Length: 112
Image (tube, rainbow, N blue to C red; front, side, top):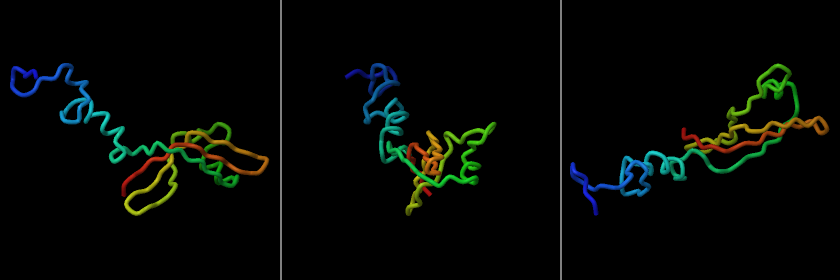
């Protein structure tokens, strides 16, 4: 083992070290917050939602001419005890054949 001149353990390339036994490095500042399913808000799941095509839906999604489509906006998918399930819109498809709107995106948790 190597020891630092100021005392304690010395780890080569410490800021990029991945071991969970050391703190203040890339593991607890980045990977633990993103990859740990108990801490990350990302569920790594996708959703697909169908709704009826009407003017109110088109207004809410902003799909009219010269409007901004709400890509990246969140929709409430489900309310559960202790947390809510939100979906971030990544794709909007309007079908005039059967008068439906299809939303696709990623599911996120948010604690209440």
